[in-house]
Length: 141
Image (cartoon, rainbow, N blue to C red; front, side):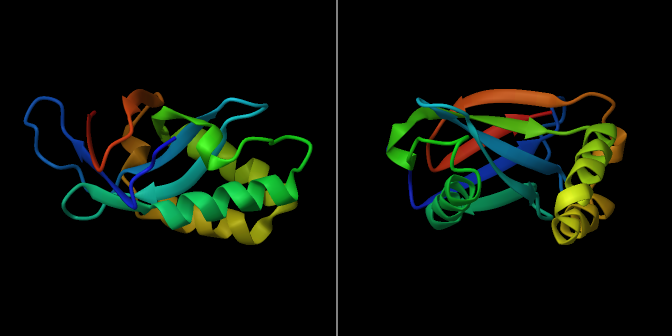
């Protein structure tokens, strides 16, 4: 995968095309070997944008490969040129926090802090979109 140094993800309201601040989301990298990588979470700023750097992606891939060595085999170069953006519903985020809390309570606190400032409680279903990787991605919800 050829990944830019920075990826700007902009989330827009589908009808008005206005930016949507406070959206909690994750990205999924599609791995050629074993499991896909979930990177994040991220939250959009007041302009409906979030910047994800290549360094953050590499750090999270390396962390997952080191910690879960039997579950992951792909490097960043082994991932597809598309990503999947997951905007999670409030219920999905609460379930994730409860699952993470069992083994990583400090990570659950971070997820809860991001969730508390997000607007995801408004979403009753997860919103998922697959996009080609480039420096700026726009996603309508």
